[in-house]
Image (cartoon, rainbow, N blue to C red; front, side):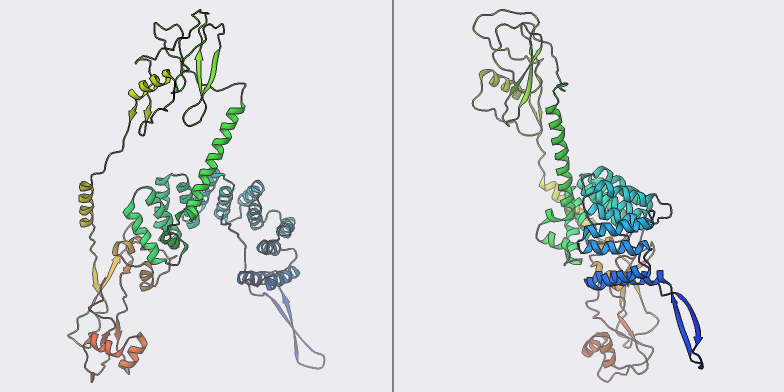
Length: 552
């Protein structure tokens, strides 16, 4: 579980007022600074957290103690100190620090949120949920979505998947485009095998314009489970090319998908369902006062004096007692091939009957009274050693068994469809001429067209990189973007490096231009078809790339 701590850090300057006095018998001023203690404490807290991030724990502890000296009644000081104790594995001291912060201000939402995350980490789920819900209920609290996500992650840690889904939806209600909540909800749907809902949430995440290896991995797993093999392979290629050093890329290349966080979550959900099923089975076995046994009565054949009621697909015993006076149903356990005891209920007639000492075999059910078995696989062969009546019953069941087989794939049809798809996926894009205001130094060198794409509704940088087979990192570099940036409809996205010209200024030389752009002089001369004695004329431009290889 990835816990989220909302530690408020204010890097405020030391505020205060300045009083100016002078020494006796001298005009030399004496300056006295009255420092705002709260601001000084928060500055110390900010320094402590930076030291803690870099692993310098001793300096972090020193600055936190200095912050406590400046503002001992500030809750932020104590829950920051508690966070320090969490990082150095001192849960008892951390709990005391949180309790001190709550004594100062019981309704501080940041303290309640952080304390809830701490309690979840030490295994106290109920108390953690209580503290987090207290923080959410405070009207002035602005990190409600973060606390709901903390609740969801804690619920997942303790197999409370139903509430986890509810909390994640609440987090998205307060912040509809929160990336971590979207991915967590999609991952939860994937764990529950609700692949269509998982795909919808992933598409919402991609619509925000963000691309991360974590989201790509989840998309890859969903596509693979849904049988979209080509899409899954394309997504895997993007992960390997764009994020080669990520854990997701390593998992794909080493075929260790079971170790990814989403597969681990899927297995965790499966195990929780098995535990619930086992508990329900144990409860059913212990309950004897009111056994929940379903008895289905059928009309007996006209010549049969002892009607049979069969609750399962296992045949009843061949021999019956010669006489009986009981009116109750007899429950017998009959072993099956898979060693699971199934209950066969045989109803005895109300009137006692007499028969010879030899037993009669129970009549085989007629076609109208037979039980039809629907099997989704090949019929199983009966065991070699069975009684005569069981063999006859098995034959009767096999004769009426309906078996569904999978349809065979026609390779010729599918190959034709795939070829047709490949022929129709050719994409075309517009090109434009840039920097047409300056002529080329050599008029015989034509200007190059810089390819670009206009963002349309529903598109993002990831889909563009897939469409034009261009690495996402290159698109970000050429357009001066970051992974967290959002692109709006109508934005022009360059599909190749747009900086391919140098405008000649007064005093420029080929050596200076080559050094500035990290190219060779002979390359500049070859690309621009220049002679050794060429004069660089201001108001013209030079080509900085090979015109033969500059293409999409």
